[in-house]
Length: 61
Ligand code: SF4
Ligand code: SF4
Image 1 (cartoon, rainbow, N blue to C red):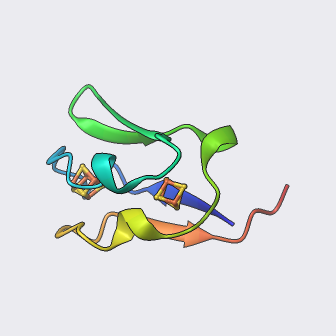
Image 2 (image 1 turned 30 degrees about the vertical axis):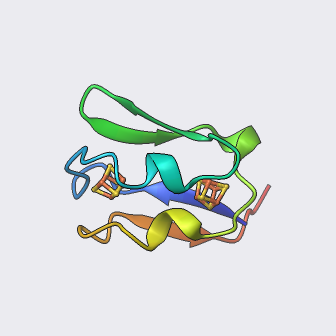
Image 3 (image 1 turned 120 degrees about the vertical axis):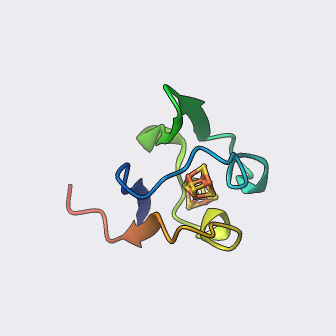
């Protein structure tokens, strides 16, 4: 499982950044970017996203 960001919804509010236990999220050019190798798919980052911009998907790779 890993998280993905819908950049068209993300406001860059940074609420998700501090929730990630593996520091996988950073804000670049105003939107959240998730560094795939660090994401464990825990879903904590979804909780405070008011824009519903993050989803956790099954990793197909
Ligand atoms: S799913 Fe978990 S590990 Fe992945 S970016 Fe969100 S908080 Fe971080
Ligand atoms: S909490 Fe949601 S809207 Fe805010 S930066 Fe993270 S993904 Fe974007």
